[in-house]
View 1 (spheres, helix red, strand yellow):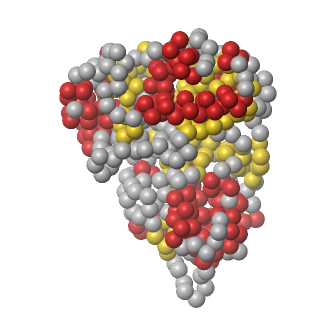
View 2 (spheres, helix red, strand yellow):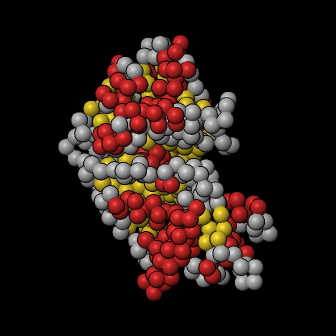
View 3 (cartoon, one colour):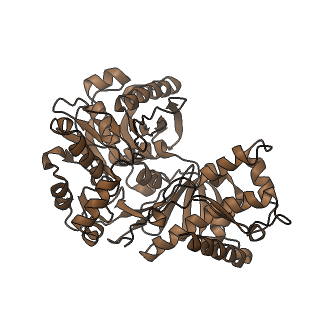
Length: 494
């Protein structure tokens, strides 16, 4: 018995097949091998054609089926995860009306800012747990004003994973998690937000049926079965946006459990069991995968734009004589905690929500030409990234998050011993590293959706923990001193 996971990213689509009983990955593939095209007609715009997602899903799916050699009737469930906040519009015949406006498109920012003020900041935060910002609802408002001829033809709106489910089944649905990431969900009243749709002039008929995150949401149609070589009637039994799903992939379901990623940008994602929010909207709060009307489970999302991109920039522009990130880490490790008084503010990848959308750019502080070396700069960069995480986690703690254990995949910045030890040292949290990814998590969740696994504990029993990094208590004061110095420099900038 097998389970499929589909991960619809903005760079590629990944497909993973696992054996349900053991949780073992049987085959995994992604497409395209080069990054998918993102169209930017104007500065700040970012669009993708959802048909490209489907095309690449089919290619990766075909490769997985060929590699595994299994029979399609042995696949008992499909889980889907996707790049969050994208907008897909279809007419009554399920035809696409325009390309998808994806997560990194910023054209809707003014619409969200105006809505935040005119609906009321306190009302938005207490009911939506976010400002409307640049999320899906604001993107739809942009279409309404700028493309009225398209707006008039809309039958249903969707998120990227809902589109894939529609292509698989011919049916359209949306979860509470999906509605919340689009800033359409009123958490106090447990319904689609009347404030948002009335303010933006969005008909309620645009919204598809609300479906559970786990459960038989739809089944594979005859058409899709023929396209993919699947069995007609195979259940689609789970769907969620990429950050809630990444947390699920690391077995993060309940209060006190924290997930983190550190690629080009970085994320810390924790679970709350009460309605709360940051009054300055520096972190986002969405419904977690196991949130229901009776069980409050909210995912608090901290996003830092300037993380691994700083390390990458240094490699290609500063440490060009070093052949790998491993070499950079080795050189950085020769520098002591605090990098001899050197501090780097890493926010050089655009405006940062954690800084109330200020754009500070990256900066180096305290450099002394007589004592500092290349290794000190490389260490200060990694510590600066870690300190940006701690700065955001302080905000999360202020709204009730208890950060004791941080779980992460063994990838990107978490491959660096300096990064791991620094994060454990300054946060005083244990770091746990696991061998998993979003597509694997979606496949496991599909097993929960069909009832093969009794609960998350059973579904993730085989999740492999690779390493545990305990805080170095003897160096705790050194980390805190370096963080305090870093924070003072940031305060002077902002």
